[in-house]
Length: 292
Length: 300
Image (cartoon, rainbow over all chains, first blue to last red; front, side, top):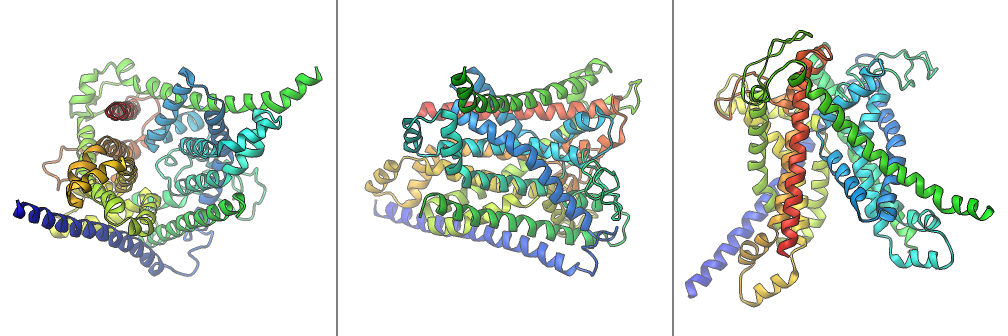
């Protein structure tokens, strides 16, 4: 009996040590992974790499931010609106259940499948060439489920006394949502939006056949309706993530590896900055909204 | 009348708009499903191939024209997808569950302060970056360690995917473990169990359904990942002999050949059929998760 107890204690100690090792291993792995990308990126730095010429990644960086911005303009109103519906108006029943299944389906669809759908509907059926706007639409579809669930959760988390107070002084349900629930839920919704933006920055498979794998711009044209202009959303444009893929698969530039290393580092820094920003902003808004 | 307009402004307008937006999501999902079925069934309807041939034959020579007559056996790609995803799951699951246990039971402070943010970072790293590092570090390393001419292999794909699904499984498992009734822990300790005995014999069994959901989510993600796998898999059109040989999978094949085939041709339709298969598989995953969730509730 005594030795059995002793064994149990030894097993407990061993398990604890092993679990510490695994946790440490993953922290080290992540640190190593990130450090490797950043160091490789810094080593690949050369003057003019941010330029908007063919050898630089200026256009790709611009495309990345531009495409994600357009996609957010499309997906945030739809996602937030649908989230409000789910949290406040949807009655338990067939339609709501169906909408939930749809959101689940959307969120589990492989991004390449959404890319194919985008290619078929936004490129092939409209008869247009690859363009940034089609890419933005594909990314919007990808981020819809995230935005909807985040909004729904955020609004559900609003304390019910806030709502009851508002309804008691005679506001309608909709007025309560807009003037009470939404402001309180904003910090969490913004965190979700930034999360969606981060995913958009890194998305590649959905853009392969929608936004295209190359950019051809003339920097002297600033008319946004000219398909050669940097500002035109209806021109082919590759984002940073897709640029890395294109450099690997069909690179013609001699220093493709260097540019890919640098692009990966820039992409990572961009995403880290965003997730850090969302955390700081979220904490700050939270303090402000809760009146502390 | 004025009252009605007032009410319209204050309630019905907003309500209709958000209801409409909910319907938009349903429509988007329906049209994706509809188009995939429409295009994906072309192989079987227009070009008269059997589903049996598509799923179980490894003869893949679709004709890139509108006459058909090629071979559309996609078994190599299907087996490739299955092998890589399950290998990734095999590698990632033990580590994920161990990390989740560490974060909740062994050291919640370190877990919250270090591991949670670290997992957030893991999630944020784009798949092409995983693929790129896999290509430049992992593939040469595998070639070196196992003395191979090239390191492109099922193993490389499995490791890259394991890294990508590790955060998914871990964070869902953490939620599952945190949901275990605290009374179980108090009762176990009161009976004199060690921490490990509690974890192993009480906590993990009661968190099983939640952890399983995380595993399925991870599997779904692994199945659908395209570019990271495409970079390290080697794109060889043969069944792999072992985990060190190169092969191909569905997503990589779609990604590399969709742009080179004539829209509506046999080759193109066969690729769409693979996309349809991916859709059906993700439906199956959702179904399994629902069943697990239901079972979990019944147990409670």
